[in-house]
Length: 211
Image (cartoon, one colour):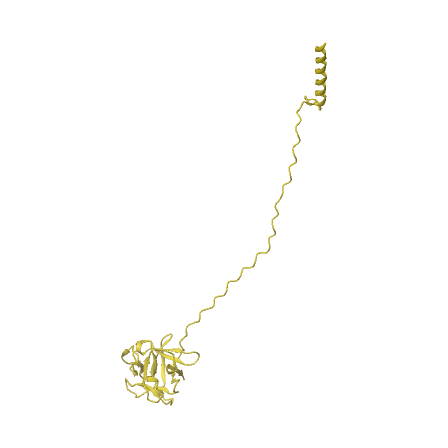
């Protein structure tokens, strides 16, 4: 009697299990129930900040050109050299060789005119139009105070001159052999004062106008 009751209860429980699908019932396809996959969240795209226009490059400053060196004044033919400080002209104390170069009252005569003969793009010799002698540094000296004279033309460095402008008017009379400038001895301003060479300072006593 008790065994029959237990067997009947077991049959009822099995029927319930199959009815609810616990033991493969339910849909009747015999496949285990697989839980649905959780939905995949959408891919988030990181926002890219908007790029503004590229700034224009700052132009490089234009370099300031270096000032050009002073160019010697072009000369040719006979010229008159007039001292700025006195207004007197460059002449000589005679017509012979070794005659001293000196200041003289301007007359426009040939003994006060000097023929500029180019020997290089910026160099000349100066030949006295009246005497045919060249302006010369005595003995080819390189010393301050060396006397200027006229001498037979040979075209060496102590007879070569560079006429270097001072501003826009006068020039310096620079001896190529010594690198020194022609001036009146001791800054004299009287007729007969003789010429020497001295270290170039571009002072008024070393300036000459061309006429």
